[in-house]
Image: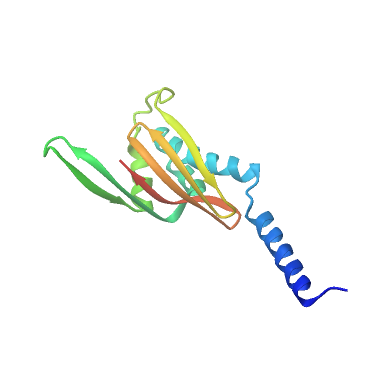
Length: 145
């Protein structure tokens, strides 16, 4: 016969096991996170802003710092989704060969609904935070320098 304490322990153990299984990302999740980062960088490199719709959340918040050579100082920049799409359309409007431009993607962590990625690109380093929403991985925050 089970005691009340044993029943509570069994319920807790089953709950933890169910949570752990639900919180464990699949290899498909990891591949989708990498694909979102790749879509993001290639949308810019190949002047294909429509690819950002697949990989970037419309409520994107991109913050970063760039060195202003004329003023010899670092400046902060903020970029919403619409501005990113405009930049993607013009960054490589001349359609230069971007095959040698850096696009090193390091996936730090993938959980059931969030992920963290580092991207080294032609413009610097982006740290991407992604969320899984509606079954799709989308970049929600970017910090860059």
